[in-house]
Image 1 (cartoon, rainbow, N blue to C red):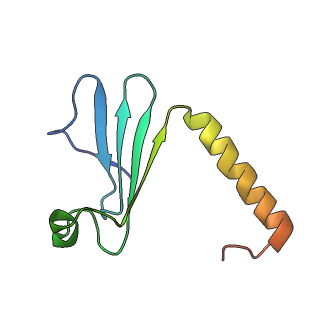
Image 2: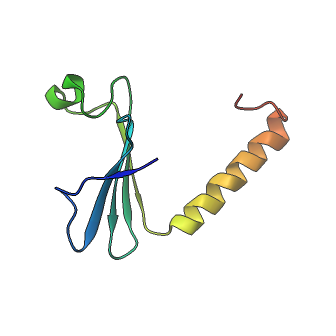
Length: 88
């Protein structure tokens, strides 16, 4: 699911991308994560190389366990409200 970018990885951070180019992340020594999701074209496409990357979502996460718990709770609430077929 993730490939290490060994050219950009340093002692104090780990740079990762998914093999298909739709996600990238920098995982820092302090537990924080810079998480990116690319839209329309994968991150290595000419599109993202020549634009201001307006079609990229960025989130800074410093408590990954809390973020996972919040996303799971969000999903559970949506399922309760919309029913078991929500998101399919």
